[in-house]
Image (cartoon, rainbow, N blue to C red):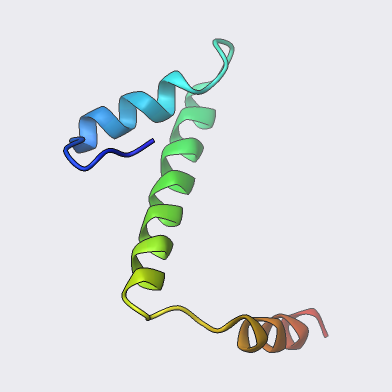
Amino acid sequence: MEGVNMTVKDVAKSVINALPSRATMDDVIHALYVHEKFRHGEQEIRQKMGVPHEAAKKRLRKCIK
């Protein structure tokens, strides 16, 4: 989805265009928010700032209890 030279506006348009035509404003806002969170997470992983899988599972187990 995101090319090297895409502007923020281009990315937003792409995310919005991927939504169904009946999408609400809340759907648009949510899709943009989720897209940005995933982009940020992927960037952290590339910078070796991510949490290892086993550590994430351990954290999740603590939250579920």
